[in-house]
Structures are given as C-alpha cells and as structure tokens.
Image 1 (cartoon, rainbow, N blue to C red):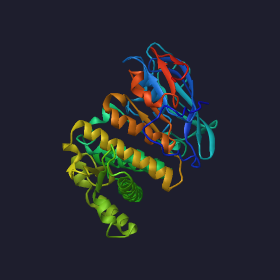
Image 2: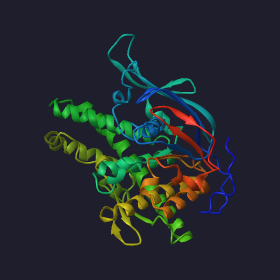
Image 3: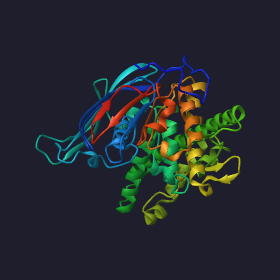
Image 4: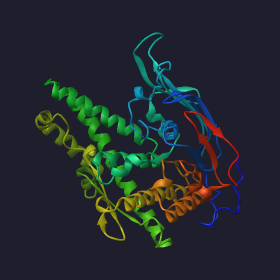
Length: 406
C-alpha cells in the first residue's frame, strides 16, 4: 500500500477524515474488454492516475471500472460494443471492492447463451460468488460518480442526461433506488407496448399503472430528498470557503410529481398519478410514450454567485460547477451521513481545469479520503499528487505500475 508523502501537496493542510469508512477498488481484472486482452491492476485507497497518449485505452479502463456500478457505464454503450475485436465474443470484469461492510468480490460479464451460439445471454453479475438478478444489485455494493468529456453538454443537453446524473448520485444514498428505477422503466415499457399494439388488456394495464404509480412517486420523493440534502451540503461548503475554486451551485428539481409532493401526502400523489395514467391512455397511445411521470422531470442548475443558468455559463465555468456539485455530494456522504465517499472517475480532468482548480480538486479528494481514478496524457499535471497516488502507465491495452513519482 502506498505511503503518502508529506512534502508534495501544498494545496490544503486539512487533516484527512481517517475515522470515516473508506471505499475503494483494491484489485481490478479485465479480459477481452475493448482493447484489453487481459489486464490487472492493484491499488490502495489513494488516488489512481492513468497516464499515456491518446488512444491507448485509458478511458476504456475507466469504463470497465464504471461497470462495477449499476447501469450501462460511463459511455452508456451497448454491452456488445465492449467486446474486444478478434476476441472470443464476450468480456469479463472482476474486482475486489472495499467498503463499509468489508471487502466484496464483484464480477460482471457478457456471456454467450451456449457453447458455439451466436446469441448472447446478456450481462451477468456475481457478488461474492452468488449470481444476482442484474446490474441493479450493484447499487448496494459500489458507490461511484464520474465526470467525462462527453458530459460537457450536461447543462445544455436534454433533461434525460441530468436525470441520469442525479440518479447516479442518489444510488449512493439509497441502495434500493436503482431497483425502483428498473421496475418503473420496465412497467412503462410494457404499458407502452400494449398501447402501441392496440390491445384492450384493461386488467393488465391497470396492474402496470399501479406499478408505475408506486415506483414513480417513490423515485420523485427520493430525488426531492437528495436535492434538498445536496443544497444543504452546498450551503455548508459555501460558508466554509466562500472563495472556493468551485463556485456554489443552485439546484431546482422540476417535475409534476415532485411539485405535488410539496403539497400533498405521497399516498394521495400516488393515487392521482395512477388515475392520470388511466385517463391518458389514448393520448399516450398517439404519442407512443407516457407523457407524465418521473421520466419527464428535469434538474435545473444555476451558477450561484452570478445567479445565471448553468447552461449559459462558459465551458470552464460549467466544468467547475459540475465538479463542485460532485464534491458536495461526496462531502455529504462522508461527513454528514458517515458513509464512505464514493469512488470518483475523472477522464482527462487535468486538461480541462486550470492550475488553481486542479490543486483545489486534489486537496478536496485527499481531504475526503476518496479513491479517484484519473486519466491524463501529461504526468506533470498531477504533480500535486506525487507521493500521494498510484501512477500507472497505459500503453495499447497494457498496464504498467511503476514506482510512484517522488
């Protein structure tokens, strides 16, 4: 395990919160994933810096790490696209993940349905050797957040991107949240299919609408709670450091169910949503989708000091706002709820932050005790972490962990 050097970080002298539980990936193994034939890396709870030229597989490695969490990973790519070209036709990822309840052996893979078959059985998940129903089961094991260049459009793109980002944050609070999302989306897809096919299955439709109402209102309530808690954490950071390199963020959750929950009990909102779904069947049939529900909500974000929407901020300001939001979330977990800080994945972060913000970021992640996986082409951009992080050179799908820079 790496021993932090005492002479290399000047950005922050705050003591790390060592009494808090830690959360990190201790060992990661890949096979036939993207451009990796096989690869393995072992790490401690300190940051991990992946260095190498563009196109050698740094982001692919981050993507593999992201698949240890619920969902489709940081690129949201179809699982079949992750298979190594020229490989056996499937891929596998395994890891030893340390958390509040001790280490867990986690494995996930895309496997063929049968020997010699061209059909794949889909993604499978094992936790400590036990087969689980699907990726949603990982929500209780791995808490992870990532920032990648593709998220540059988070504030200017469609609401679905902001919902997906918020939902990843919420999984850290609520281990059953991913399962509720899956249940809602599955019921909604089935209802959409029935309506589109013109089938008069009243009893089946009613059952699906009950499921959508129960899970949909629970999703909306979880989002309201998370945004409220994040707003409080942001206010605490603002009071502690009003001149932070990461300006404070204003948040507003916009959605019909969320608005109703501010005025009525959840059980009444649930009944109302169920009746609304029943009344809107013909309208939804014509639209070929459900027009009301938590899948239509949005997270409005604004630049706090300027009081302007984040979508009109400069690219640099948007990156700083997003980083500040992620750090507030990590601090909320680590300091207010006595949970481990989430694992943070940052792709090409050094290229998108100036020196002041890079130093502030490194100081924050060390203070919070976060394991952060970062990529970059220039080792010197991570100078503040020399002696504090594991540095690995990536070269065409190969990983070489050498001596840490001193």
